[in-house]
Image (cartoon, rainbow, N blue to C red; front, side, top):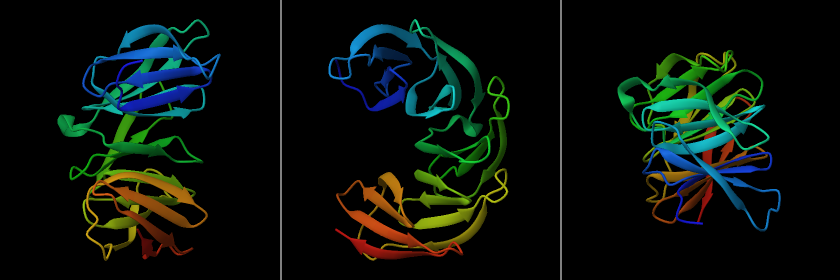
Amino acid sequence: YGMYLYFGIYGDWLLAMPGIYTEVKLYSLADPCHPQLVGTHDLGFVAGPAKAWGDYLLVAGQGKFAVLSIADDGTVQTVGSVDVPGGVLVMSFDVHGLAPYAYLGCGSAGIVVVDLTDPASPTVVTTVDADARQLVAVGNRLFVAGADKVAVFSISNPAAPTFLSECSPPTKAHVPVGAAYLSSYVRVAWVNGYVETYRISQTGQVEWVAGI
């Protein structure tokens, strides 16, 4: 099937992205054990993280954030897109669970907030100063992992994340490569092999719990 860095799953479709080309490949998952190549699609930008959102597949990458649709026959269409300020790379993103807003983690360039009210015309609302390499949005909280610390923002106002707390891991963890939320805890995987667990209180205070 080739070598890919990113994948996006939408229904019975798998979009595979090598992370270095603008062209992506679409596979059918009608038989999950034997994906079948259906075709290719040129996004016009180097694609990275992807996530299903309602009737759409959201894809971020180098300087772009796009809303895609995939028809029953496998036709991929770009419904709408927006330029990321500064043309920076989007390292990760997540979407508010109750409002049409996406939060793009752009490393030292900050958190870019995108309004998805009109999927055909996504709009950059603001940029929040933070080192944001991995993001997890849960309820009215946004967990952000940076190069050497983690932070929590309130997204009670989805368009304007507000800083609540931060902490640094006691280990030598640096450069997060993944984050996942589970029942008041966030686990962060770091590029040097560490996996850290953080607890988020009801008031949005974050604390380190354990690391391996």
